[in-house]
Image (cartoon, rainbow, N blue to C red; front, side, top):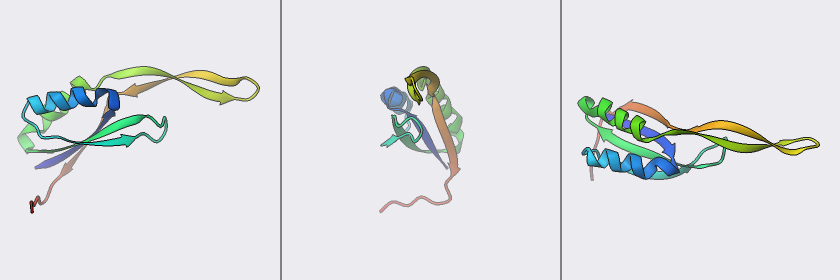
Amino acid sequence: MKMILAIVTADDASTVTSALTASGHRVTRIATEGGWLRRQSTTLLLGVEDDRVNDALQLIKTNARQRTTEIYVPAEGVGALPFKVETGGAIMFVLQIEQMTSV
């Protein structure tokens, strides 16, 4: 069994979660915040059988879209300058689960 931790933007969390649950995956959502842009994100936790890991990863990739966002960076003498950055998509970690217990 594997644990997938997927960090997606808050904008994509519902779409990703719906796609995963429609495919039979169980998902836990945790509201989080990114460190660099200070934007809301969502961390998804999925316990997945080994033979379904690729299915879950593909669903996340398909439903978490990248986008270009404009942020303003302070500039001396000017105030702030616009700067475009890529946001969105997903960061995914696949971890081996050695033991799972329920109480």
